[in-house]
Every structure is written in structure tokens, then in C-alpha cells.
Length: 183
Image (cartoon, rainbow, N blue to C red; front, side, top):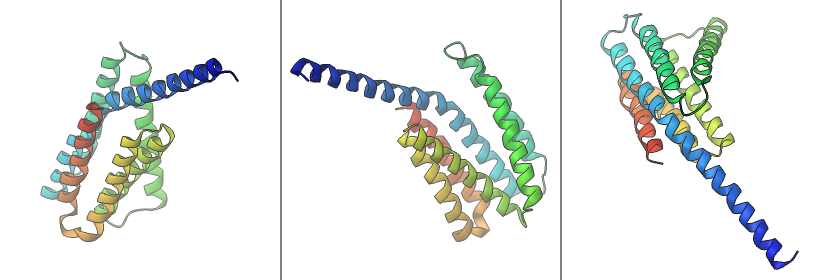
């Protein structure tokens, strides 16, 4: 290779690297409102569970609210991107519901705390896997934080686990959303 060929190869490599960084940053900014939304839902849901443990309708209502708001975010940003995003968000929510229903049917939890821990651990896993595959270090860190904080609260703060998840779990999502927005 000649000197100009090396320079051209370096320039192409730098362009590819810049495209990757740009795509990750764009993904961070698009994810931010969803994280903030679900952080608020976690705060309301876990606090409600702590204050009124037998209020069975709280989480289903919050989940429906989150899905509807997610459709709004997907449709609102569709002008800038794909129109199918809202549909994908809803289909993903349905698939997750079916997964959790099947999991709890096969492995029934013994307490509400087990359900309250399993779901955020799963969310943390999903964020972590996405962060690895998308080379999105902030998403990976957020997923690890949610998982570790959930397990820590479950074992070390069992009497306050629901409040722990409201403050720490919901707070981690909101802070993560703000952190991604500023990327």
C-alpha cells in the first residue's frame, strides 16, 4: 500500500467509527423518554404496593398507561423515523406479557417480593444484552445497575424492598434516561 492508500483506509475507518458513535448517541436520545416514563411508573407502582399491598389493579393500570404512552412516544417520533415503531413497541409489550405469564404459570412465585424482584432483574438483563450488542456502554451500565440494585434490595432490605425499588429502581431508570438524553 502506498501512503495515500493508508490515509484513505484510515479515513474510511474513522468514518465508520463516527457512524457507530452517531448511531449509539441517536439511540440513547430516543430511549431517554421511555426510561423516564417507566422510572416514574416504577416509583408509583412500588410505592403503591408498599402503601396498599392488596390493591391488585394498580400495576395492570400502570402497565397499560405505560404502553399507551409508549405508543405516543413511538408515534410522536415516527415523523423522524419509522412509522412501525409504535407497532413494534406494542407487539413487544404483548410478547413480554405472554413470557411473564408463562414463566409464572410454570414457576409460580411464593411472594409478591419475588415478582417485584424478578421483573426488574429481567429488565436489567435485557438492557445489558442490548448494551453489549449495540455497543451502547451506557445502556449496559444501566442494566447492570438495575439488576444489582434489585438483588441488593431484595436480600439486604427485605422489609423495605418495595420502597427500595420505588426509589432506587425507578430512580435508576429516570437518572438513566436523563443520562442518555445528555449523551
